[in-house]
Image (cartoon, rainbow, N blue to C red; front, side, top):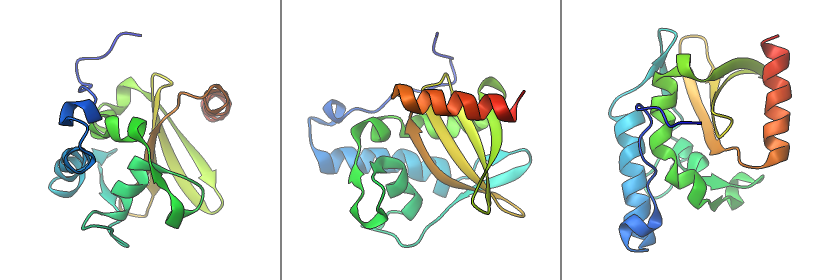
Length: 156
C-alpha cells in the first residue's frame, strides 16, 4: 500500500537521541497541537479528549493512546503507539480515505477509523461530539482478522 500524501512521518525515539523525556515531550507536542490547541471534527461534530485524570500534566486520552495494558493504572508506554501519534488527526481529517464503521461496546457506540489495516482510531459517540478513546497500530494478525470481520459485518 502506498502512503498517502496526507499521512505524516512517524516520530521515533532515535529522532530524539534515545532520550525518553525528550521523546515523550515531542510526541505530546503533536498530540497537544492536534487535539488540545485545536480540535478536529468528524461529520460536523468536534472530536474532544478526556482530560482527567491527567498524569504529568498530560491528558488521560494522551496516555491511553501511547500506552498498552488491560488495567488502566498499570498500562506501559508502547513505542509503536507513540511513533504513530502524528497519524491520529490526519486519519480523522481524511476519514473518506479510510475504513469507517460504527460498533457498540457495552452501552457505548464507537466509530472505528482504520487506516490500511495498520492503525485504528477509536472515537466514542456522544450526543453533541465525539471523544477520542484511543488509537493504536493493528500489526497483530488476530487483531486484523477481528477488525476485518467487525468491519465487514458493519459495512456489508
